[in-house]
Length: 116
Image (cartoon, rainbow, N blue to C red; front, side, top):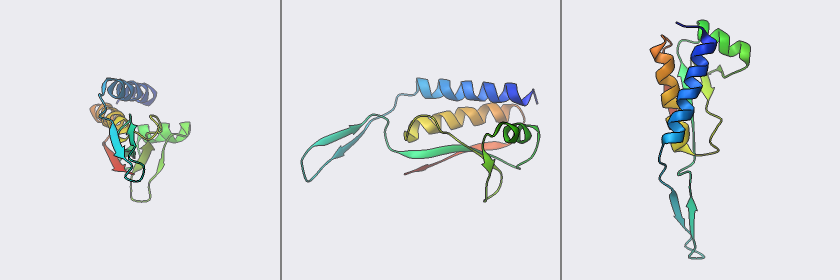
């Protein structure tokens, strides 16, 4: 694996590029009471992150020293995607691209997400 700082920087850049290039489908909410329609430009709300397993190795050591992520109670080391407000689509795009870079550099991980 390359220098963890460099890999992390590449992963962040890949995530940001993936989110930037994503065409998000807005979520439309119809208020039955008022008849008004509300458009949520970022699409459905949710959370996303990257789970590294096992929670050890050069990358995890680097992340801990930088105060990035935390040990997960269900196993592994977890990095939350904090960018992009509540947009599930943008967070998922970021997490997927981020995980792809880490995996390409020998870090076993996968993106996770959940709708809110």
